[in-house]
Image (cartoon, rainbow, N blue to C red; front, side):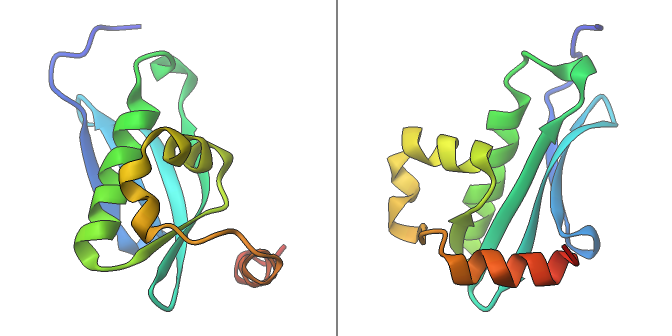
Length: 113
């Protein structure tokens, strides 16, 4: 594992429905979503093993949720990592909606599961 020389960069990639975190220009992880009306439904977060233990998932999700707030949308945390992050960061409670069976059914249909 090489030491980071540049701060990680988070970018939203709308055509792929995800936010990516880049380390020295290489994609180190992502958090995936689908939009349903005014809600951004996060369903998966991952960080490549080569970058594990560096706190990149937290940086990624923090930036993603800040972006959701700035866009005036709401958060639905289907992803276990995002749900865990939200329990520790109550500053997002005002824009977080619960995961419901209806949302899960909608997400499964959108993802073709």
